[in-house]
Image 1 (tube, rainbow, N blue to C red):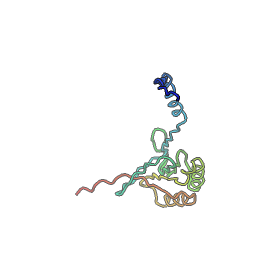
Image 2 (cartoon, rainbow, N blue to C red):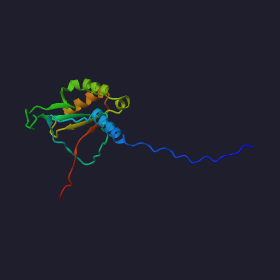
Image 3 (cartoon, rainbow, N blue to C red):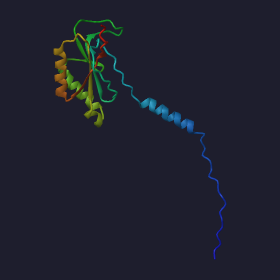
Image 4 (cartoon, rainbow, N blue to C red):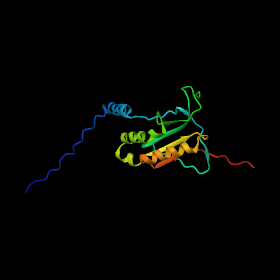
Length: 158
């Protein structure tokens, strides 16, 4: 009859964690390099209108900004009285909006293409006809999700 021997308890060797901080900092540095922070700087002056029923949209991906207002320089001085349209970082004409939206859509991933949202930030004195023209161009481009930026209306003091 074979004899069963109890094996002596063997210790598992400890992990060497000396290189772990190097690995963590390397991964952190990699993500800092490949992450693209998209910042759109308005080149037009606009004062958003007031509204009473507002909701925030927290999505960041697939978001295209359209600013409508008077052009300004780097110091914020108004350059002219004509109303200009800025799509993300470039000035566009009303007829070029559909093509610009198509270019922005081509830069996005497949999921983001279907959920593209256009945020219109127009000056309160902008003519509604211009905003309707912009909406028609967005309709042609297939960008049907549109947000309008506004500020909360203060309570009317009695």
